[in-house]
Image (cartoon, rainbow, N blue to C red; front, side):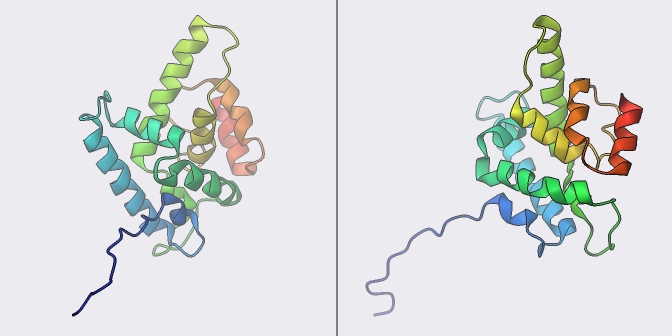
Length: 169
């Protein structure tokens, strides 16, 4: 009898944090990350979210599939890179996928609205994390309004990032 006494268990799913490991090519990690976030967004309307950006923002906040852990692990690599890498391997900047940019834009718009209604409102840690993750790879988040206090989050990211921050200030 094949399989007698065998228990069929569902193996634990890998978390997205594995995408931030140095041995995972950032180009491949970006494709996987984008597809996972797109699948969340597609399922989000059924769960009562307004759109995909809200789903991704909630996923970062709740560390869904260890997304927040992955972003936190990748920030130091992003801060130390210049954005150049091999065509096949890529670099950590590749992880700044459109779904994360949309989630940040949604969160930033909400923070600006809250800032205008309540002076001194502290910024959410999720918004700060997304800013540190996305600012340099996106070229300074062109076209995205955000609370300028966030620029202090990238003060130690190197000269290229300092130049981007100076332009946005």
